[in-house]
Structure formats: C-alpha cells, structure tokens
Length: 359
Image (cartoon, rainbow, N blue to C red; front, side, top):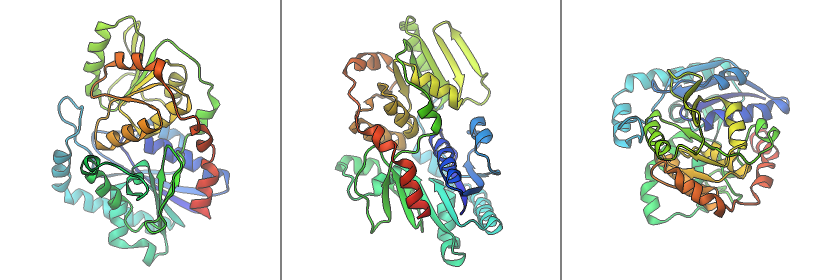
C-alpha cells in the first residue's frame, strides 16, 4: 500500500512517531510516498527527520502555539487570535493539502495530529470523493476515549485539547490513541488504543546508571531557569538538549553544564546513561524514559504537555513541577517505581499497527 504522512511540526514526538511508523510499514512491504509537515515560523524541521524519513518532504504553514514571556509558556488565547487572523495563509495550506493528495493519490493518509489535514478532510471529503481514508494517531486521542476518566476540573482544562483532537481527526476512519497502558477503545467513536511508537534505536541502546541529569527544553526561554538552578548546584552535571535555531551543535556553559542541539541518537544515548531526566513533557520522550526506567521531572509548557504529564504520572514515569527545580528530581530518584508492564506493552506495537492500518 502507498501511504502519505502529514505531521504536526511542533516538538519532537510527532517526528519520531512518523519515523517509527515509516520503518514498520516498509518492513512489511509498504511505501511512504511523501511527508507533509505543518509548521510555524518559530520551528524548523529537525535534521534527523530530514535525513532519516526516506521520502519526499514538503512543508506548509499550520496553526501553532504562540510563545510569550521569554518564549516559555504559550498563551492559548494569543495563539488562537494569531491563527484566526491568518486565514489567507491557511487557505493556501488547505489548497496545498488538496493538491498533494490529488497528485499523489495514496491509498491512505496517516495524520500525526496535524490540524490543517483534518480541516481539509472536512472540506474536501477525500474519503468519499476519492476513496482515500485518513487514519489519525496521537496520544491526545486518549482524551476522546469514553473509558478514560478525568475529573471535572481536568475536563475544563482539557476542553481546548479535546476540541483540537476532534478537528485533527475530522472524517478519520480510525483514531489510534497512543497510550502508556492498554485499555479498551471505543468502536462507536472509532478509537483504538495502541502502544507508543518507539524507534528501533531505543531498543539498540542498553541503559546504564550515570551521574548527570539529562534534559530537554522545548522552548529556549527555560535556559535562564536551568542556569539559575545550576549556579546554586554547580556540582551536579547537566546535559540538556534544545531546538534553538541559531545555536551551535554544542554550547558549553562550563565543565558541568552543556547544551546540545537536538539530535536523535545523541539524545537517546544521553537519556540511556543518565541518573534522571528533566523535560517539558513531550509524550515520546516520556515513553523513552519509562522504557529506560529513568526517573523524570516533568515541567509542562502547554495544555498538551500538562495532559502528558498527568497521564505519565499514572504509570509512574515521574513527578510534575511548574519550574525546573532539579532538586525535586534528585529527591524523587530513590522513590522511583515505574510501570513494570510498560516494556511488554511497547513490544506489541509493530503487530498492532500493521493490523489496524493495513488490516
């Protein structure tokens, strides 16, 4: 079968999920004909994805969270206003999606939580007019599962996230909800619970116990926060990764504090050898940390990551905080008790995805 991927271009998780699924599909004789990436001006497609995806890659403008206050926490209202007043950009993007689907004529479209793609299916109905169904996959779809219970307070907090999840999955024939744990799906809502999509490189690296804290900053604004903590605790080695555009490959603050431009293999090896992980709570890296059994401090940047952190906490991944107070991570390490069934769940991924996508 011939597949077209569309990928939300913020953060690291959707990219690594696309790489993983592409490898699984090719292993079973299928083809990824192209990858369309919805991105904003503040993000660039990472080099590791460009080098490894093995398919023609195209970019288009797509809604994004707008960061404010030193590029730390995105403000949803500002983001919505910014995106609402750019209709001409998104009109072009909708036309671009339409053109590529009509040109490439894939058997199926796999949508990694990209909003414009969901909108395009709602407007142009490729499934009905061309017989090209769309399958969507993301962790956020767990929130649409009636078997997943949240509190009244969380229902209010996650309202926007549920709305976005419905938009991205408009007219989807199947919604694959990536989950830390197995749970029933919902045939009525077309939701199927599936394991995380970890890349093969994760399984090739043997974890070890290091003496440093490994970290990831989605937004460069957290650098000041981490630096302040490091000044008070200079004896603790820090090895952080970020996706700052103009940064060097390695920025050495001092002997015990280095910043690395996001690199997939370097990131995994650093995580596998650390004593603990501090992160802005992307789903994929939380899964990698749980697979390597690494205690984790989660500092959510926006509502998606607040949900990631909440759900990860149910599987014992780590603890949440509003700031990079790494002493909390050091205090948590002796108490760490991860989900012992997670590895077995992850190892079911290949068979489950082939059954759900190609079956």
